[in-house]
Length: 111
Length: 112
Image (cartoon, chains in turn blue, red):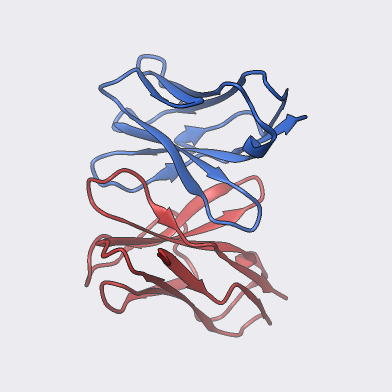
């Protein structure tokens, strides 16, 4: 039973356009959500997070939106750059601070 | 600024062999974790240690054991390796209440 779902295994966008990565969760006890970025042969690195008390968090080109009623979050990257090409993992945690990850979405930004 | 260091980076084992994956962090974090990453499966938690002296099972603990040797080190042991344990293993650490984890660069394990 997957508690964090990323239903799109891959996404391809043109450089300069917006990338939107989606994530759904089922566990209503999750109260903190994060996005990690992973390049090949490297460990995942933290990108951006959002607490359940907010509905938006922005950091430069990256914005995460949270819709608690729909149990849905999304990551927007504007404008997309070729260096953004990587696997993006959505993750969620509750009071025990353990992270539960989605399966990941491979983003390819074409020059 | 080493962060989380994993050794070895690559390993090939024969079925039935044993080995220990090592992980050390220099950030004085209390919590440490072992994940495995398989194609199409994302990152799945094997074991974690919320603090020195404690360990708990995660989502996929079967076939593994762990040791929290001290605050810095958290090792993962495969007693009798199986081909199903072929994977990339990531160690991570975090501080309770602080967002996110810091991951190591991974150990790519192949069991033949």
